[in-house]
Image (cartoon, rainbow, N blue to C red; front, side, top):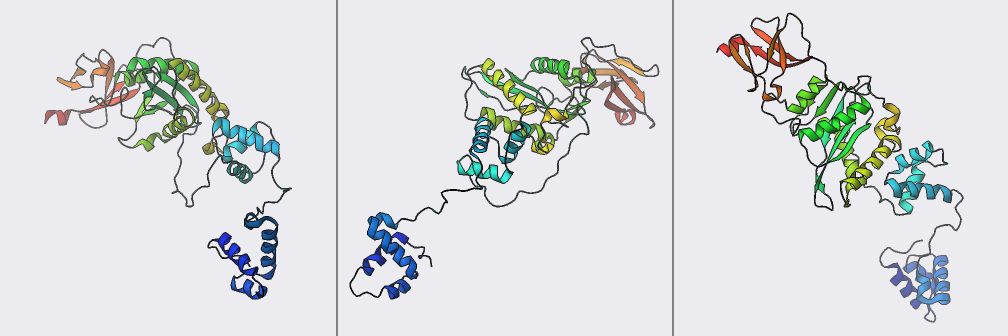
Length: 376
């Protein structure tokens, strides 16, 4: 029988001191302390051999465990954990991809626990959620800025991130000095030259691609429309719309930025380039059944045009040039489209509804004109 849970050391000491008294009934004393005679004799022998130190509990860990993972596997598991900080599922997949001998995920998890690389998880389950993704690469790219932070030079770094929705492939991870239109356009140009043009890009409502009062268009989004790239904006105060890029930012923060100070922009970009390669080609992704993003991505067939072709509209379109005020003249009225379209040509096309027209810039509808409402 076990000792009572309250102060087992003091109970054992007290028991053995009482057992040393002459004439004591050892069997009855064992009963009073709630232990068997076998246990009582065991502790009396240890006390006689080593004194109070002999009353400590001995480890029940076997001296030899034939089912324990091999030392080489443990070393590989710990090496991957120390290098990348991943959990058991990703570590197991990484070792399998490298053709190394590995173990079950539960065994990898046990190795991490045994070597204090992770803490036991709290009980409880998270709420269910559903993932949405595009059917093929380059149908949708998500773009955003990771929150800015200071470098050792006291300059602020603004990481620009672009992610393919289907494959989670990181297309751009650039350490920028600001969030201005020219900076973003320069980085997107380099990205388009390497990977081609997407069908559509999703972004939030912040600068430089959102927040405009003129129908939500900015000079940057007008440039994208001119390239034939459709534009979508997430719902205000609803970052889940760009959930994949938000999740990318979380991994970036934990694995690259947390509690680290980088010397300058060059050092920051070198680390970004190193981590982006790992993210795309080495790091297993749970949403991809532990495949790497590179296994599901291929560049777009739509090449980036170094020179923009001339805008072409149908002969039946009513073509108007946007004035510097952001307005066009149509049906004796001035229609506001927004300053980002100034000096651009747009096409006005009638709809099936009487007095209702649609305004197109390149192949994208940018506004609707209802002459009846304007007359009111």
